[in-house]
Amino acid sequence: MKKLILPLLLLALVINAAVAQKNKKKKWISLFDGQSLAGWKIGENAASVKVENGQIVVNGPRGHLFYDGEVANHNFKNFEFKAQVMTTQGSNSGMYIHTRYQESGWPSIGYEVQVNNSHTDWRRTGSLYAVADVKDVFVEDDVWYTEHIIVQGKRIIIKINDKTVVDYTEPEEVGQKIKEGRKISSGTFALQAHDPKSKVFYKDIMVKILPD
Image (tube, rainbow, N blue to C red; front, top):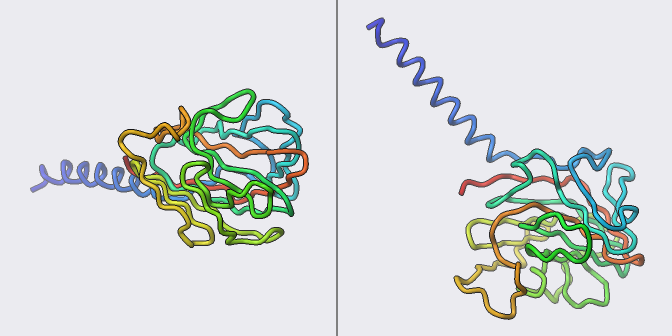
């Protein structure tokens, strides 16, 4: 009987470690410390992004802030991503998924999830930009709301304050209307500074890693 105790204890430790690792993947992990841009990297027009009062503020000439931190080695495949967002009148921004660092220009890799409640661009908040667009306005400017993105396999779900506004499954052969590089794969996240007249706030930026 005693000879069985040690192997059983070792088995229990292995099982507990596996369960702990699995549970860790299911937890929300913060990507923004509320004080600095540690773990993030910006290319052109770095002054268009700053931290104020525990929030990331994007305002100025075009610039993109890419997550470059340690979580998942900034390479996410299946995940839930969410942030608290607040737009101001006439502002435009976006959150990129499955993208990669790019020094300048509009990111050519990944999908953009729109942040825009009153800009002249008709594609509104929650749009999977130029792929599955939303025309309706679900939130007002100057009010905090939650934008929640879920990617599992070939499926992308976008929720605004828990309301599903996009449920898109990428076809096996992506059509010609989809720009080259706009395909589900894996990559990091990015926040967009769109133009000097657009001012948007982000906070509580979090990710939950989902199993492959």
